[in-house]
Each structure stands twice: as C-alpha cells, then as structure tokens.
Image 1 (tube, rainbow, N blue to C red):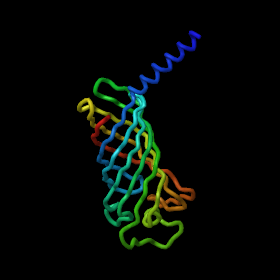
Image 2: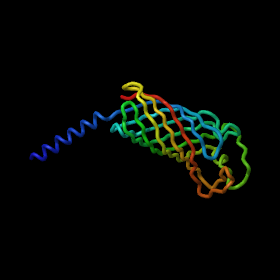
Image 3: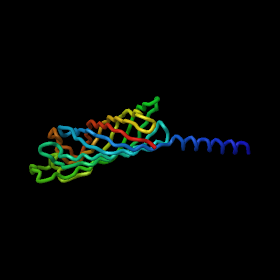
Image 4: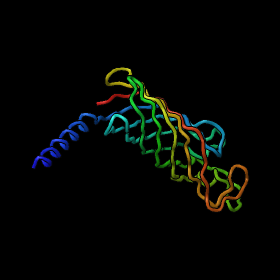
Length: 197
C-alpha cells in the first residue's frame, strides 16, 4: 500500500512539474536561403509556433513565404512557400538558449509567371522541371541561439543546412544526368522575434 501511495505522489509531482515547464512561443522571422543548383539568395518572411514540453526541448512549426521571382533572370518561379516541422534541443543558460535543430517538411515552388523557354531535350534541365510548379521535400539540420529580451519576449537566430530533394530524371547545374533525382545542400538563415505564453 505504501509503495502505491509513494508511486502516486511521485507521478503527481512529475506531472505538475511538466505542466509548469510547458510553454508556447509564437514569433515572426526574416529568412534568407540559397539553392545548391542556382545562384543568388532567396528572401522571405514567415512565422513560427513552438511548443516546449520541457525547457530544453522545443517542437517547431515554421512557415516561410518567399514572394519574389527566383532566380533573377530568367525566373522559373514567381513565389515559394516553405513549411518545416522539427525539434530543437538545448539548455537554458540564464537568458540564452543555444540549440541544435533538425526538421523536415516541404518547399512548394510556384509556377513561373509567364512563358519560360526550355530546350527540347530529355531529360530536361532542372529549372524547366520546376517552372511549371512543384512541391519538393525539404529538410534542415543546424542550430541557433535564443536570447531573452524580457521574461516573455525573445530574439531567435537560426542557421541550418537546407536540404532539398530534386526529382529526376533531370540535368543538374553541372549538366550531369540525374536519373533518380538527388539532394542539394545549401544555407538557410533566419532571424526573428516573438513572445512566449
């Protein structure tokens, strides 16, 4: 009987400490990202919702909209929408929380605004395959820093390797035939602010 009561008290204390440790964060960010197959930066803005079941672990849902043509000339996409869902892990050290992160999601490439000229070869160059619009798998591995501006507000910086899954068959930027598609690696940087509740 004593063991059961002790277990019930322990379970109650653990659940109340978890409840007090939980928090939610909402914020906005500016993003700059690159593509492994194309020159130039892609700029966008978005928002992030984070659930922290413990102070050391965060579960992120991140949406970013890139509203401009990409690349500059000739542009194969009028806009892009990226959704990444992942986890951050890192200790809180006073007002600073360094973390590592991993996530997965999608990058929806909007079709080009007008006619996009492509040479009639098979397999087509990668830009031709994207010009009609495509949803690609996206992943990221990286880290960042969260700095408390006050007890409820923060600034967050993330730097990650953005990994995009290009489909095949296609000609990559080096004019190599990729039968089954391939993964491209490039930098993604975000800076933003938010509040927790």
